[in-house]
Image (cartoon, rainbow, N blue to C red):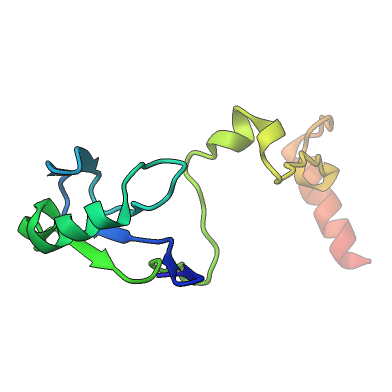
Length: 133
């Protein structure tokens, strides 16, 4: 919990189950495997006393096997390495939102036989001439 002049500004909960959990006294549905700061004034309007009461005897207490109260913000661990997206949504549908620039480079070396109309024999002869020189 972060404190500024002894004022608590964070109250983190984590849903550790594969199902959404309803907290009745808070009138809140917590999606599966998510973290929430219930003192975040942009998204929630709970008082610290209300949350502490729920933790002591309310729905946070009753569902403590499903919802864990945390003292600090959970770390999001990402293993180092390269990741490939199978559906790069923002790069294809919304290129203005992406910081990735996709370049389409055309290399002539990769076009084997394109534009050249020679027979297989002539191609084989060219290869043998190159090997002899």
